[in-house]
Figure: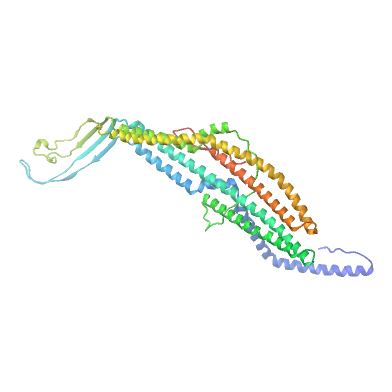
Length: 485
């Protein structure tokens, strides 16, 4: 430690030397006390690091929100379980093609007397049956129906992914909006509180009447419920984020979104995006699969009224002879030895009373309903994208207008604020100016928020969250266009 010494004369030198000695003493004392306080300082430093780290880890980006939602969201996990169940259901539909085999081994004890026999005799008989469908009209549609069942489950998973990611994205934007809105209104309230203080000082000095002070107090108090409303909406958005990310609010702190809402102009081509959306949207793929599945169900029902040919090979293995068959009355009907027989049989359901027409018509009605729903969804794609594009254009014009108006309103509010402090402007003029500035700034924030919502809706309607493979044998989902705008 080096004290600064100013030499003014001989007396000053003595004073300076004494001051230097005292400074050294204080420096040594401070060093000793610092060493004693060193563990406490280290503990405080570690605590500060933990607090900063905790605050950093709580802030989440949109990319992290989407990734966590994709990995842990309950609705997505349930859709994944449905995909596993569909794989088992596929085996049920394919079982029509597979052979059917049965094995049995009846055993027992034979007792009683018949001519030429006496005593008790144990026996065992091995029996086997093997059946194979040779011809059945239901086989091809059943095989296709089993494949479609898996594709439906896959697209249901894709739809769940898109819905949950979209909901999480909207909740993220809503949280940013309400937090910024709360900040704007709180900043405005602080300015109004300063005006309250100014008017109070002017009233106590006799430069203004009590009306100006009361008016300023009322104006500041009007913002309190608005701030509380924005804060409540921010908490609600945080809860939706936690729900999408599978975070339990009772066990963990609510997520806090990182960053601020940004306005990035988006130029869209409705025609090209409509054609692309018809190819890649998961809900449209799902609707088309429902049409295909209903068509195969109709074919399976109609196939029940065609002849079905089945080949079978029953066989019996008898280790001992002289065992009576059930219900036999002579030795010629007893088991003589092992045998294998082959045969083929066919069945043909009798058509009567229009039952076939009723069942088939019901399945056809379901298929036609699915087709109608699919056509409505496809026709609505172009209208929906056009509506969102027009909305984007309107929001862009509104944002440009409010951006220019916000600059002018801020400058006017600053000028009036200075004039009020000097008594050159009335409290009413100040109140009108500040309200106009707050309304303009809040409107600009709302325009930016609506723009981000419209961009998210555009990505959803255009199928940009994910793009899907057209491979009907596998139907694997691939990551699509990025959401980083």
